[in-house]
Length: 100
Image: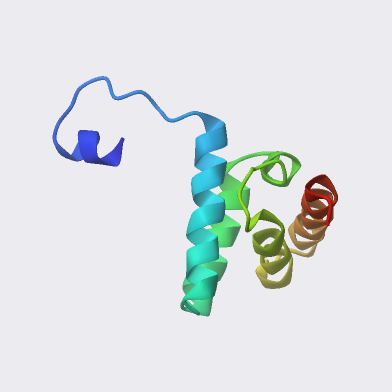
């Protein structure tokens, strides 16, 4: 989608929400593995959860091997206590879903 838009393609459809959530988990997982800049990562985490209402209600269902770990990190790094708690609850759901 980004590649198409950068090349001026018209009528590029928006990606489905489940793809957005998968890409969000994948991006945060990569930054966590790379020991990325904490302020930048925190901004990304807070921006994602603010941009999508019900983010944590949906994202725990993402079929990505790092979903639970990313959600745990989001729970540690989010500055809003309510959102941090939602992230930790979502991490628990993701682990339960994965059988671990």
